[in-house]
Structure formats: C-alpha cells, structure tokens
Image (cartoon, rainbow, N blue to C red; front, side, top):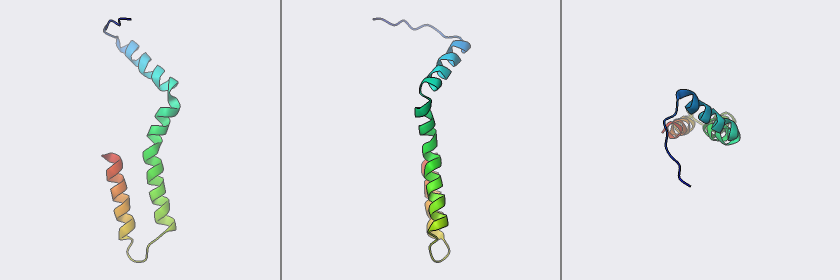
Length: 71
C-alpha cells in the first residue's frame, strides 16, 4: 500500500491533531500529569518531613526537581 503525501490545509491539520488528542486523551493527560505529580510529591515531602535546621536539603531537592522537569 502506497501513501502519497499531499499538503494539508490549516483546518485539516488542526482536525487531525485534535482527533489524535481526543482518541488518546488518557495518554496525553497522563504524560502532562507526570511533572505535576512529581512536584506535588516533593512539596508534600517538604511539609511532612521537615529536616532539622534551615531546610536546605528540601530546597535543594525542590530546585533539582524543578530543573529536571524543565530540562
């Protein structure tokens, strides 16, 4: 089966993109939720497990998590 490549209009391109989003919504939502869940876990850990001292360890973990997610 041979597929020929044809140019798409803006409407066709958007229609295909949103059709993929609707068809695979759980997958896209799960991928988008991963960084948020990770940062939530770090923040909850900093609330419940406050280290003795200045909290430098929690701050370092937070910034490491933020840099990791944004990278």
